[in-house]
Structure formats: structure tokens, C-alpha cells
Length: 243
Image (cartoon, rainbow, N blue to C red; front, side, top):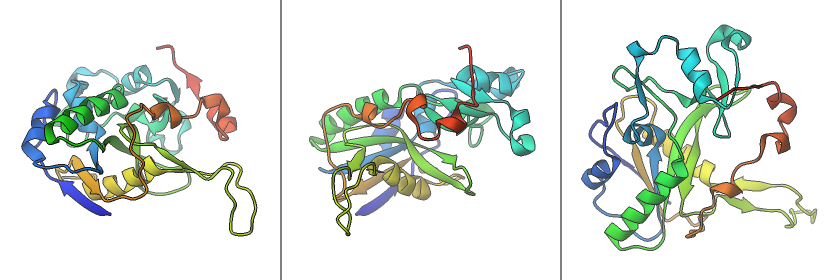
């Protein structure tokens, strides 16, 4: 597997053109490549930016953007409003103000749709068939320090490798285990793209034998309804927002 971070010019809020950035920054893609794109540049491309000085109360904006939330006063230290946004457990509705030049950059809308648009554009441009595009973000994990990467949307690959029905080394049938290929690779991508001033919103992974490419839209295979999640006894403490 080959990992290639791709540096670019600064991508500027409140709106910029991701296709222009792709044309400037990516000279070649080959069969079997996977392109990772940070969610922030997708959100800026979509114009999802709010001038910080024009937002009277950030918490109101966070709750407006969230499906479910737990108030800052109930979080240790009061550091964040804990939210569920578009089916993801993430602080502050994924709103980001780092490297944003005085704007709140919101969570992108319908990441898988823009991933498909980018994927089809690049496949046509480079005349290839097997290509996947993954939109990434980072978040903290319960009971662990540090952030890790995950996929907010994707197109062109199957996200999971199922072990259900297979046998372990002692012959026991596996009942539940599935490996998240797309999140495992997203963690690698986010590690190399960084969280600071790297100016590396794109990353290419080549020669990954674990990936199965597809022309189908597979994001629906990736998420679990809230009530069916094994952590529902904890997640049900979130308040549903009226938005």
C-alpha cells in the first residue's frame, strides 16, 4: 500500500472551488486509487461558513445544526456541546474554527453525493474505472485521548468486510464482526493529512488489496439507526432537537 499526501494552496472560506483545487493539485490518478478529502474543504466548497463575529451564540448554532444534543453544562469541563449530526456522534455538530480565517466552517451536507460527483469527474478526466473518493473528518473517541479519522461520506468502494458466518482459528462461527475498511483507511489518511498547518486536504492511497471497488452507492450499508445501536442505552440520553 502506498500513501501519498497532496499539498495544495490554501482553500479559503467562505467559499472556494474544490474542482479548481483538484485540477491544480492532482496530476495523475491510476486504477485502484482511493482519494481522501478533508470535510472542511467540502464544506467551504458548499459555502457552509458563518462569520464568527455575526454569530451571537455558538451553542445556538451548534444545536441548530444537530439532530440530537447534550448541553455543554452536562459535559465534564463544559468544553463542548455533544451532538449527533447526520448519524455521527461528534462534538459541536462538527463545526470547525481552526484554519478558517474568522469563520465557523459547518459540517458538509451529503458528503457521499459530492464524493460521487468528484469521483465521476476524476474517472472521466483520467480515463479510469476503479476509483473511490472518501470524505474524512476527525473526532474524539469515548474513553480515549486524541482524535482519529472517520469517513463522513464516500463513493466507489464497499465500506465493510464481513466476517459473519466465517470460522475463527478454533472453528467457532463468527456472529457479528465486520471490519470498517473505509474508517480504517480514513484514520490513516487523517494521520498524514494532519490537524494543524499542513495544508494537505487531499491524500491518495494506492495498491490497497483490502478494498473492493463498486459503482453502487454503498453509504447506506455503513450506518446503524440510533435505536438499533448496541450503545443505545447511552445514546438515548441525547435530547432530540427541533430542527
